[in-house]
Amino acid sequence: MCELVAMANAHRLLLKGARFSCYAPEKPFFPKLCQSCAMDDQERWQIIFAWQKCHNISQVAREVGRSRPTITHWVNHYLEHNNVDSANKTGRPPALDTSGAEEALHLLLTDDQGTAPEVARVLQARGKSEKVLHKSTIIRHAKAVAAAEGKPIRAVRGFPSKQLSKDTVKKRLNFATRNKGRSWANVMFTDRKKFYFYYPGVAVKPLKWIRKGEVWRQPKVNHAQVVNLYAGITRQGITKAHIVAGTSQHNSRFLNKKGQASKNITADEYMSVVGDTFLPEGDRHFGSGGWVLQQDNDPSHKKSAEKAVAAHNKKRGSNIQLMQNWPPNSPDLSPIENLWGYIQGKVNARGCKTFVEYQNAVLSELKAVPKKMLRNLFDSMPTRLDDCLKAMGGKTEH
Image (cartoon, rainbow, N blue to C red):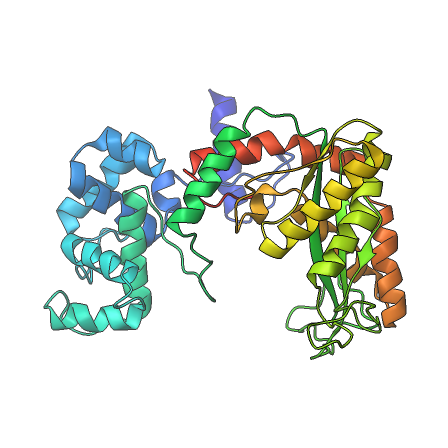
């Protein structure tokens, strides 16, 4: 008992900052804050809003991830003091009651209002608040209601992502259903990519450390030079890159309808891409057996590829097939899209000073892609299709 008393006295003296020699623990003693004290006002109001909906302490505890005693404490505190202040003192009632907070959430999520200041004016006009509330008050109450419902909200900026049409969703769903169980080991995925030379002489890496208060700025070219190329990937490796019209400092031998050197890819040039690069490279990767060429569903691509494949099969007695019914607007289903992002990051990090150096960097990075990465990309195809099916043909996170 004496030892316990001595330890208690030592703790008391330590908290007062006194020095003593009879008891000196290795780590200082700090009282641990309980869950109730460690929460902010938003979390406390989240508890109250959730409790007002169900009046069930256990259910609220599960929803907000707090203990039952903590929920009970703040519900009782609210019923007694009409607030969630940490101290038992007379406080003003919340700026919005439950119905007002729910209406704030609804208005934030509708396109007619959208912004917190606009919502604040509408709530005041409807008699939900005595005055026009600050936007932070609106957002705090709306977030608490959304969190209590288990559907948190967040603000997004910029342009909305493209919405898929019903026809496209149907095509994606049908494609995923038909190809769910297929093997992708004999498929070549192909695509075109433009690499823009935006930052000459600057190594742009995914992460850079700077001093607090500083801003990292570098000159950016408004009309950047570009490397425009086609390439294909197989599980065994990558095809040679085929540079096409649209590439800076590149003179195309293909003519447009006016008989001039084309500045954009034409049907004839794409037939050359397929016949001179994809098909020979595919034979090199797959051998003499049959394999499948995947491409996007551009009508001009389809006709050009059909001619090139038919001529190649007839000449060599091959059995190369074109993948049928590839759905439109489906970069998330093609693993080569992930490869482009990887190459772009690698090239940006080099900090090339000239366009020639930049173009060579693109080509060399394509040749240096790890084989393991290609295998992982191809192994992801079943998951991509499963996710597409789960989304009922909608966009996936790939």
